[in-house]
Amino acid sequence: MGLIDFIVRCAQLALLLEVSGYPKPGNVHRISDFKDTRYEHFLASAVAIEPCLRRAAYRGLKASRNLIGLDDLRLGYLIKYGVKEVSKWQSGGNTCLGILTLIIPLTCAAVISFREGLANFRSYVEKIVKSTTPRDSIDFYDAISIANPGGLGSSPRLDVKDLKSRDQIVRENIGLFEVFKISASYDLISREWVTVFEISFEVGSPYFTKLMNELGDVNVATVHTFLKILSTYPDTLIARKAGLDRAREVSDRAREVLNAGGLLTEDGKRMIWSLDRELRNEGNKLNPGSTADLVASSIMISLLIGKIKL
Image 1 (cartoon, rainbow, N blue to C red):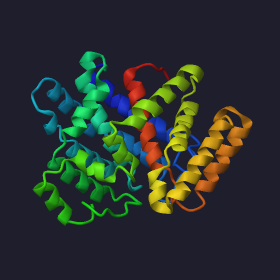
Image 2 (cartoon, rainbow, N blue to C red):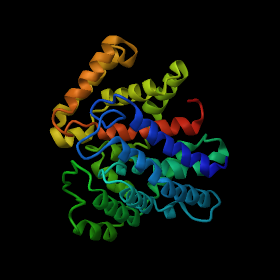
Image 3 (cartoon, one colour):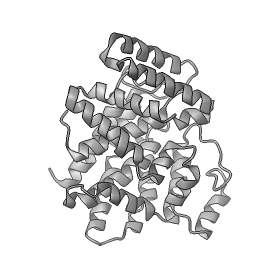
Image 4 (cartoon, helix red, strand yellow):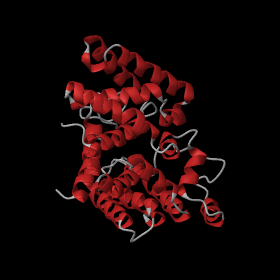
């Protein structure tokens, strides 16, 4: 298998494993759907992003050969391209914006660092996200408009819904990394960029790998990684829709489920299914969607590093 194929498949498999993990409380999973978004919409999305991932990998390859600079990887365009492809293949709304925002830079960085055995994987992620340009910011704003994610809210500076923001981005030469600095305090995906994927590299991936090596059960590893991240970091999608206090309550409940053994004990199983039902009582307001995105990026890193076998 060639390098490009390997990296693209790691990304797609990460998406498929994440959405298939069950029960991830409050999320779409293999036996629970939302009113307008089904499990199959996420499966279609994981397939639809293949050309986008492949293009990201090839641009990373060009950068590794010094044919283009890191500032010409076009992360914003690649995210927008992926969102467009997803919208062609499924009708379940926004299924991939957050995930694409995470896995596109990971894909580019993996290709560049692979010749060094991924030893500098994270450092290349940092270089890549910090090299983004105003063009990336504009393209990302376009991607948001296309995906139309729920719970977007507003920002006092560079608000996506304010058309003047694009002019300001160009005028002040604001790259996408700088844009995410503004929203990092209230958005986990933005925070992940600004902290160089701290949750994915330091919490999610090590925890997922540990569970896979100890248990060999990918569903338990996926669900428990979800609970681990959720219990540690209140989900900002919930916070935007229902308030920070509710997000913290959900994190506390996730911690209780893990402490009870999660899917490994009868008490834990009862608690996790109960939490799943409770988080669906208010529509999608209590859906830990940002957490799910971070689980996907964490699994992708574990697959790339190659220390697990399904």
